[in-house]
Image (cartoon, rainbow over all chains, first blue to last red):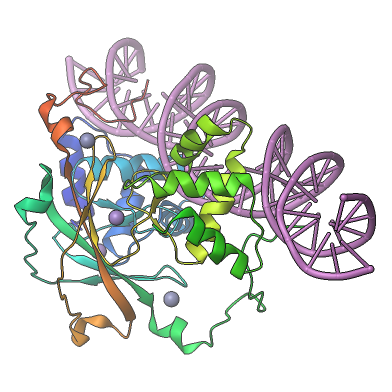
Length: 155
Length: 155
DNA sequence: CGCGTAAACAACAACGGTTGCGAACAAGCA
DNA sequence: TGCTTGTTCGCAACCGTTGTTGTTTACGCG
Ligand SMILES: [Mn+2]
Ligand SMILES: [Mn+2]
Ligand SMILES: [Zn+2]
Ligand SMILES: [Zn+2]
């Protein structure tokens, strides 16, 4: 993630104005190596600026994504993860807590033309699902008792 | 996808009852090689059985997923895609229309222990995003005029 | 073959994440 | 300072999915 100053320059270059809200979001993003959700960015920024709205956070994250300063990832954790690292890389996802870890690998996976079916595609996105260390430490039942049946229980 | 009869046996083996709704869903799934959403399964089944509810479709798709007869995929297209092919494989996704195409590849991508950060993970899921043949035929604007600006326009 | 009971169904409400909207507001610039 | 235009914020709407509940149905047993 670029510095708040660099982002400010980039925003101005697009004819966008600089505001305290945007600065606060830039700062929060700059000091995280995480894959925060809009909600968690909102939580971070709200500490400094309690009056900011979640709507503004979404707006700014989307602007940054459009400008390519941020990557929006859908890793199946229920909400969009915003990735401050724009370089090509892959992800490990904890299916229990949603933690995301970066994996920098230079894999070349070619799509066999015979199977490509005429698609024109970009770089592969590789995701491994599993358990993070803290979740695999805990025995299998973090929150539920042990239903041992369908998650959708009928009457 | 196994045949409706096999699925019926599998359901009964779990103590689940057989109903016309479930049979209709089994039939619809058996004759698709697609990656349908719950809505599109609902559309298919509704042709034969107009009284079926979307809720029942979700319920049955979830049951099949729990039993491992179906795989639920989140490919970032906005809704869950249900994959009748349970064998290990990967996907090409059209970012324009959401079409999904299977890719059978035997890639071995090892996670370097140094970068694994203690995660225990399973098989990698590889996704290529791009354009399907019919979407890349059309010039860039399938439905919108040409906004060429942020999707979130302010007043 | 008919009952009783547990399971499944349809309809509708609620939910979580995200975006549309419009009025009030504040950057930037002369 | 005043003006113009982009920005913020609160709220409603939206979409995919799941919870709830009263009614209907499947199916084991007599
Ligand atoms: Mn990342
Ligand atoms: Mn598939
Ligand atoms: Zn975890
Ligand atoms: Zn397409």
